[in-house]
Image 1: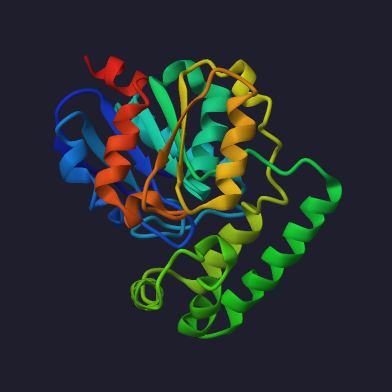
Image 2 (image 1 turned 90 degrees about the vertical axis):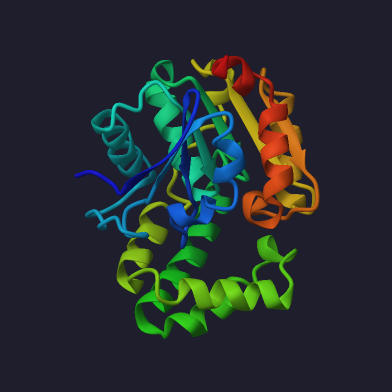
Length: 261
């Protein structure tokens, strides 16, 4: 199957953006105009999100397979992949297997994997609870609690309310539950070693106010030749919180500019 892929135009090398859980390709629209000055921009809807159908028994690797097939079908290889959160984990899994077919990989607040059995079990229990709620409860009720998690602490009450309103009508609760459990960080392959053997250049972006992923960024920067940047005035979702600074940080990674020349 193929995923919904939108061509936004632009000039230069292909830049393909993959959103996070609950989102869609439309989430990238605030940064598309500025990025089109440097890249030919595309967005993809993950399975069960936006205008893409769900897939049976999704996992991060299976979703990466479908994204890879979508890139092949649209002649988007080589390209630079930019992935946010879940989209970043999917992009990482794709690059782990087909990195030589990419021009680069940019991860925005994406986790390479939990390292202990206890952490994985704890995450699976948490995600299972959320998945059951997405199946059984009204979307608005679940989303109000979802966006109160610590990773979204930088959101104002107004921003949180707008996100809840926007997400309420976007996706099927059952498909979201399937994606959440199947692609749980607790079930994901540990990809920390990917950074030491990556066959394409890798960059990592994190928001100024995102403490958890800022600490992770520091860990990654000591592991391998990974280029990092901080998006000022932003929390976990940097391209939504501060589109202008996100674009500046992306370009500041340097290797992206090199590929476009």
